[in-house]
Image 1 (spheres, protein in one colour):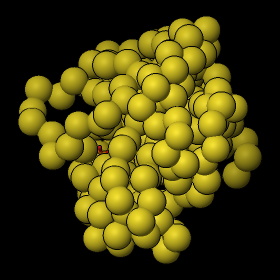
Image 2 (cartoon, rainbow, N blue to C red):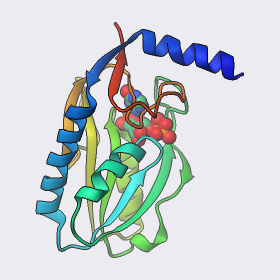
Image 3 (cartoon, rainbow, N blue to C red):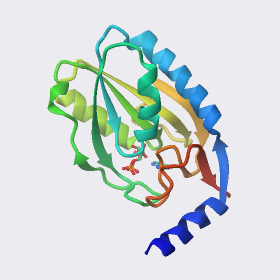
Image 4 (cartoon, rainbow, N blue to C red):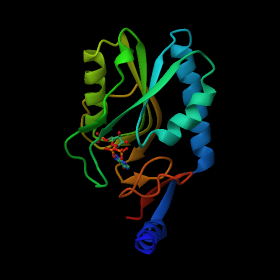
Length: 183
Ligand SMILES: O=P(O)(O)OC[C@H]1O[C@H](OP(=O)(O)OP(=O)(O)O)[C@H](O)[C@@H]1O
Ligand code: HPA
C-alpha cells in the first residue's frame, strides 16, 4: 500500500510545475492579513477554516491577525479526491455559536464557487450578523461565479493545483508551495 502510494505521489511531482513559491505565498498571506486587519479589527470576528484545504492558509494567516477573534472550522466537501466537483457533502456543519457574529471564512481556492456560496447560505441561515470570505486563490474560469470573495490572495489560471493544503487525489497537501500538473 505505502509503496503504491509513494509511486503515485512521485508521479504527480515529476509531472508538476511550480505555480507559486513558498516565498510568494508568505508575502501574499502577509498582504491579506493587513487587508483583513483594516476591515475586521475591532469586530471580534469568528474565523472559520474550511477543512481540509484551508488548513495551511489558516495556520499561516492566523498569527498575523493581531486583534481578538474566535476560531473554529467547518468541513464541506465537493471534490472527494476527484479533479472535478460534484454535490456538496457536509462532513462538519458550521458551529452553532456563529449566531449574531461577524464571520470570516477562510478557504484555499475559489474554483466554480459552489462550495463558498453554500457556506455563505448556511452561515447566514444560521443567523450570522455579517459574512466575509478570504480565499488564497481565485481561479479564472471564464464563467460567472455564484459568489466572489472579499479578500483574494492571487488569481490563477484554470488548472488543477495542489500543495499548501490543496490535494491531488488526497495527496500532497503537505507541500510548502503551489504546483499544477504540466499541460
Ligand atoms: O469553488 P468550488 O468549485 O466549489 O471548489 C472549491 C472547494 O473545493 C475544495 O474542497 P474539496 O471539496 O476538495 O474538499 P477538501 O478540501 O476536504 O478536499 C476547496 O478546498 C474548496 O473548499
Ligand atoms: O484546483 C484545485 N485543487 C485542489 N482542490 C480544488 N478544489 C477545487 N479546485 C481545486
